Picture (cartoon, rainbow, N blue to C red):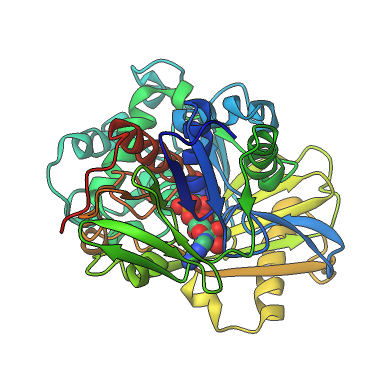
Length: 427
Ligand SMILES: Cc1cc2nc3c(=O)[nH]c(=O)nc-3n(C[C@H](O)[C@H](O)[C@H](O)COP(=O)(O)OP(=O)(O)OC[C@H]3O[C@@H](n4cnc5c(N)ncnc54)[C@H](O)[C@@H]3O)c2cc1C
């Protein structure tokens, strides 16, 4: 571990925000220790062996876009950029289960969106002028529900905007934050196809985002202490004085810092008076152990089904359903059957023969990306000189995504370096 003369940065939480902060600070030569409550790093972005299907599955298939520059930089640093895969061009395939219609949206690479003028590239049954509200959205100010900023109906909405925004916001787009939708458009669609290539980790998100990071940190003698849950922060004046891990009360030196990179509900319990988002949306993932039939697209968006995105992966098919509250209280077998029916229809497989399956329900997958909840997101700095916040729920300007989590970790690392010496504690 590098010299700790300038203090150690204790990072609480080994999700992607915490891991990104650890990588940044280690690169900058700072002494770092990561403390994770559970038995595994990765938080809400993890892979694990599932005994029912007898295969390694992700808690959810994570989709990135090629414009997610912080996430891609992080992967480059830890040597894992090649583990993400995607098409050469920004293409999105869709199927409508009500009509069996299939179409592919093909964005051109540059920022001038001539794809909306090309019938074979844009959404069927739309005209170029239907896309104007998306451009107007970019210039709207303030934060209001999306349905106050644009009409949330019609072919373009149902066949492109709703599936994309629902996946990114994890809330019904009609009630979703216009400001977060705007950020998405600015960072991806508005930059053209080169920022919109869909990328996934076919061999698992743990293999791409987590294990290379912990290996990279271990090679630099940065400990990631598992089963090391922070029970409380102890304060003295304007600084954190101790980290209370239950049976281990760790005093902090004058130059030590803390990056709290835990989920919002955990942060709210640890930091007095902290306002955070309090409403959450779930994500349900279904995993089926089956070799996808040859010729299936790597991913396909589903309209008018229970399934929303179907991923054809090596030896398995994975399905994502966002803002999935309606599925949480149904029996798991019924959820699996409903989703499998959609997969079978899309892939021309028998609907009544379910392969080995697993359903993963993440109840608090992300904060609800509505204007009300978005307004509750705190910045990274706190009232304590040596305490900084990170996490996808902090005010990143982005929805709760890998990109937002990693940017928040980078921002926290930057703040810690900007104030290398702790200010003296208040009397
Ligand atoms: C099913 C699902 C699908 C998703 N799909 C996508 C997608 O397609 N694309 C995308 O970009 N994003 C997606 N996301 C969102 C993405 O996973 C998150 O935004 C990101 O992983 C959040 O990282 P984080 O570090 O902010 O928080 P977390 O991952 O929640 O990490 C926080 C860590 O802190 C630890 N912790 C909590 N309390 C303590 C304590 N007291 N002491 C020590 N440690 C503690 C936790 O165990 C955890 O490891 C998805 C999320 C889910 C759940």
